[in-house]
Image 1 (cartoon, one colour):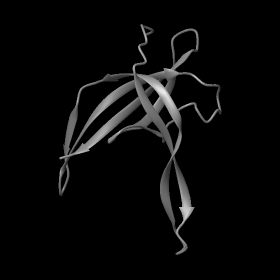
Image 2 (cartoon, rainbow, N blue to C red):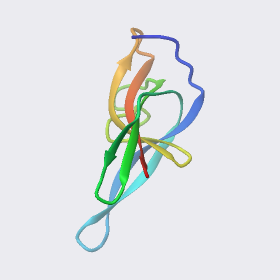
Image 3 (cartoon, helix red, strand yellow):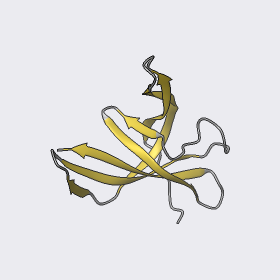
Image 4 (tube, rainbow, N blue to C red):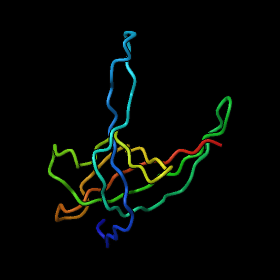
Length: 113
């Protein structure tokens, strides 16, 4: 399970915040929580036909330095990493390795075609 970690990419960790839209509903705005150095590894891509387009996605495993439970800098499911125009949705997070220094984020990058 644990191998060498090479955090060579800077990613922005973001969280969605709901704000009232003054019409009884809300809008969702992504807010940056900070920048992290990450080790990004791609998996195998998948494709799904939709009514108006084809949606392809690639799963990624992104490893970052761990922060304490509950800290805003600790990634969690429902958040996302951003790398310029690329967005990696965080699906799940697990401790990585025996020493607790890193967490592994299971993510997917979606691309519309």
